[in-house]
Image (tube, one colour):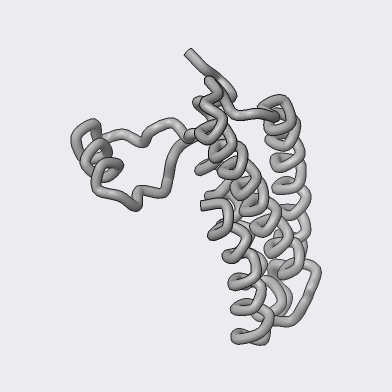
Length: 146
């Protein structure tokens, strides 16, 4: 998962600014930076989880850092949201990619710090259909044990 999140940053950047040829406007850059930042936080968390498993620790290392990163991510999302919102009304190419990436960043924030939004294996899907509710995110459970 950790490697995949880092690869996703590069693929998204290439796709939006390369393949789609979106201009590097303030809104597009803000959306990309917000989504890239959240994906990198996810990569760091999954690396910490891997270390937990390999070391047979009760909890991952560096949880206090993730508590601070959660606040920084929220501030970054708010700032990116302001930049993207200010560009609404510009030509679509100058803000729609950024808006889309900003919404991806919001989804990643929720997915990492609150509720699991990604259900990509049979066991997760079966539990989702059985309980009919979203599971708490893994990072949320590590930050709020009990």
